[in-house]
Image 1 (cartoon, rainbow, N blue to C red):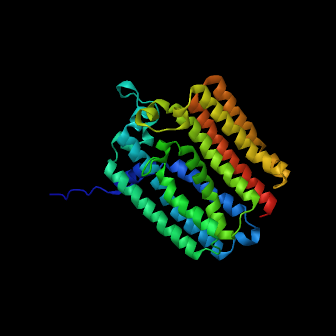
Image 2: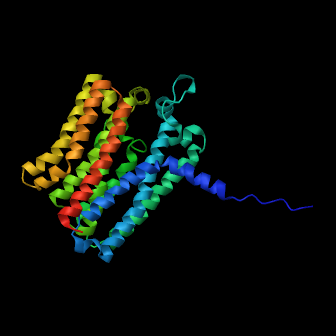
Image 3: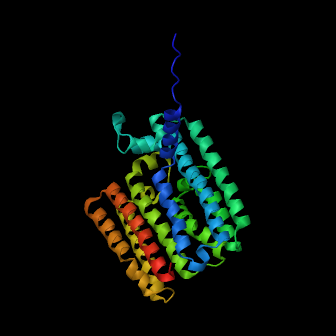
Length: 320
């Protein structure tokens, strides 16, 4: 009798990898990793290729993948447990409101226990590698170490653990966390914090906050049902529009204000003109149509264009 052919385990392995990649929203993990490109190009050319600097950035990047994976995974764990993901992604009769492939816990590709274990392992992975990065870093100013510790400990608390977004602190946490992904590695590699880098970090943070603001607008009913206290939930429709308008104004002020004050060059404002146009288009379109998911999509584009503009500016300004 012929031997039974052995089935290669490769497809199963690759499928499992794909499920976890969807769980951590790998596209957004890649977006967040762009913070390190900002950090690297904001350094002086002679510093960028320094061995200790490259090693520190690499170690921080390895740990960052774990931290981001934990943030995204544990958010989904809470979302499936309290029912907010079902409410926000499935309508009456189970009809699909948004792409379910982003939510493998909803599709049954993973169990809650598997996801939570993976998230905690990711957080531990990030903590270990960030500790090594700080130990091996060329500089360890106290402010940068504190920012790193706060980033590690607070970023996962958005909807898991302390559930800060359920306490009305979600927007502030998101702005801090996204900005800190620039501030922390820059601090431990260079030892200082110029005004320009602070501005670029805040713009990175606002890029993510403006995506979340419109996403929260779409999720008002589901979030309200489970007690998640976003600004969109806490205020009226008019109040939320004013809030998003305020965020838009502050985002643009972060670009223009430091130049007016003389802290950074006016050339930076010129380089960021595409962001100004896209951000105004995003908000004006939302006021006109009320289409939150379209505004969110435009926010993703605005964020990526912002990063591209910053990188071009840094290369021209600092040299390559």
